[in-house]
Length: 60
Image (tube, rainbow, N blue to C red):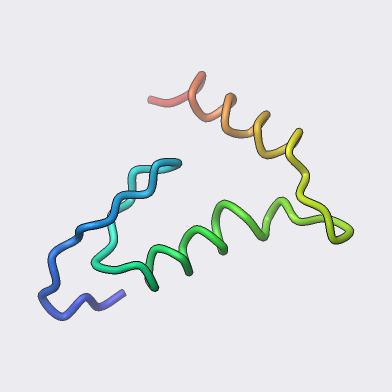
């Protein structure tokens, strides 16, 4: 992703990635933290939370 010299001002609270603006952050959040857990027009909270806990436990 090209930022053209913009300073990163937004930090994702779920994975700590940083973004220069809201549009880039929104694209990231939907792609990484929302759509993978959207099943049958419903958000699969159980799977999302389980994976988040797993990442915290096994984080190096």
